Length: 261
Image (cartoon, rainbow, N blue to C red):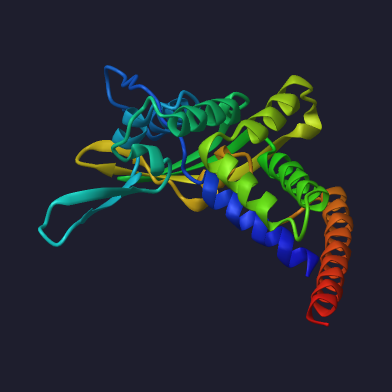
């Protein structure tokens, strides 16, 4: 039951955050001449939130959706999908998403350890390091459980308010991330080994944005594995929340019975 609650919060949190970033174009003068240059260009564009360059040298674009009249209404991308859609860059939601992703990418570093090229394709082994976003999100999820525990009733109204704040402002999550970066130590970083695939498209090297690569530069954000300490804390908070729900239901039943009599 507790694990189900925490997984549910994780699912909501990730899907609220998923693919929210934007940036100004810093397209280089010359296109990448080698797979290594394509990877370096891609990683720099991610760190700087330069989505024009990212889209130019990767397979980020997936497809375009049309309405019944055949008019394009939405483009689909592998990453940064939400803010690649037409919308006001001056909205609070857009600005908060940009600020959050700036913070996430602030600690991003990478190293190419090996390159294997076979004509028009290449495989590059990399070590990608970033702030451990799984730990940051776990801390945030525990805070959500604590807010539910301290609020009246079941706490679902508080959960709804927290999710609305995450979608619109993200101030709480940004604050947690700020604190983590300000007091950064090696345990707050995570290094992930990943093999990146490159290919030539019309004579130009491009990078495939695989799920493993996306997870790596996102600081392991999309893992479904909890750290032991956070798991124990979430379990404890979840049990307290269950007791609260049982007590609330019992009191409600007594009140209803008294009213009926």
